[in-house]
Length: 382
Image (tube, rainbow, N blue to C red; front, side, top):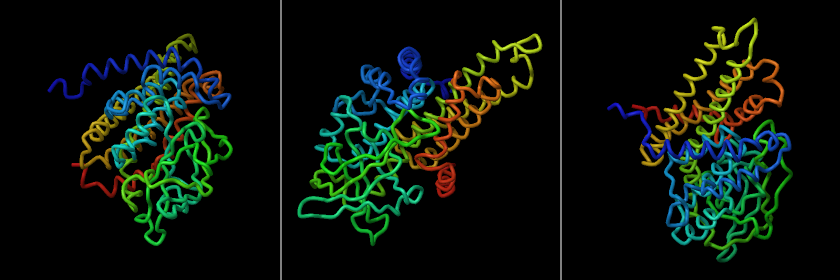
């Protein structure tokens, strides 16, 4: 009973090793990655060398077979140093999970093996007029003999242009609405695939976000994931698992901001003493720590449910993403407040963390959508 809320030693060892790597090889470049809005190549290379870029890939396809909790810890520790860099393993899982959930053995060997070797995998669901209402997508896939022809575009695609492979959701029978959507894998090298300009974002500036265009992209039937019409179901099942990686990302951002603000509060002196000695600052830090601990417990509980594919996974994944991202926004805002004027300038990392935290409340389903999801699964909570 004493070990009920204690992580097994292998997870703590993983945390220590990822934190050491992130501190040495990722954090030193985080400021420049953000300021220059450039791809975090140093993080990519370090994660690939350490086999952390796609650690979730099963061992039979060349990955490390990291379970959901291990993947969460990896993303959390990278996000603590650099949120943009944490999107490398997070997006790789998001993009490839439909293959793991619905792909044939041949498809898994084809794409997961290359992913484990360092290729990138993105996820194409949202469109200009189909964000929260993903079922309203207009991208179409039309049969042409034994092939499919894809036309349309996808919006807000993380790591677009960098990734080699894209899970794309397209309507194959518009009359059926969400039940007429099918999933496909499209490769960057396919004729007709192109990318829009880089979005100029508030945060996560080191992760390229671009529109993806499909102009008469012709692919074979071997690119279809699952049965025709199962795409929307595959997409929602994917998000049940990957929302937890956003919770982990938010958790890491919050932890990084808390660590920096705590250190600063002990060093910064006003009125003859460290500002940590003022009760107002102590209460802020106490609340920040309490909320981070609570978010971590919920996120890890959701990760375990993801690994077991429990019946209450949908509620827990939505709850962890919603709660952890709200905590990240509050914690980073308070970290800026504790640093005062220094917190507001980019010489110090907490303003970047605050900007990064905002996105975790928006993507993979806004927190308003998460609350709708939770409300529809209240019976699963007890």
